[in-house]
Image (cartoon, rainbow, N blue to C red; front, top):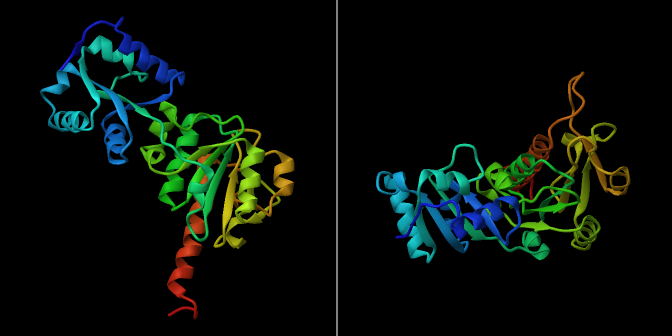
Length: 272
């Protein structure tokens, strides 16, 4: 197994380009993300392991064997080289480069009643990653990322999603095209508004819907809110006026999950 000792090695430049979002590959930082990528059967091209961990950490050693079996090019690297390759302040013992997950808009509509999250202008990658995380946890069909949003496969967003972005269908699309496709597929647009919308707990979320989440600060474009089928507001105790985008997404997605679960339990003839 090759050992990298110089920061000038071309492999270092490839990792730094991926961290900046300048490459076709995504950067996976840490045991958790690398393991999730393997489980999701993503094509992992390269992996770098801290030399001090390669022989001493059983979990790392097992992961290295799995990477080799998956035909990844695995190298070990000295601490200074790992620090140069990793974008985080305290480098993880393993990082990898993988192909981006491939998904298209039709992948989001496999369910009979799709629950899609449309994130528009969510510029904080940690927030976007958290939205993807709660979407998967709440049983959403997928996420569409539009507008001036962060890259859902950037390393910060990937860490924020805790691996969900490697499993849940995610499509980056122009907002107007996404809205047109959602309407073509029969999805009602449920736009979030900080005030003057119906309470999320009073809206029927059991049908095919797209929950539209706006970015930090400005929220959704008023024209998009006006054109939505439903405008929902999260009830809040004064003086609180707004919630984090990921928190808003979580509340609505889980309310939809609650309603759909209760409907399945009740069955076609009402409660058992």
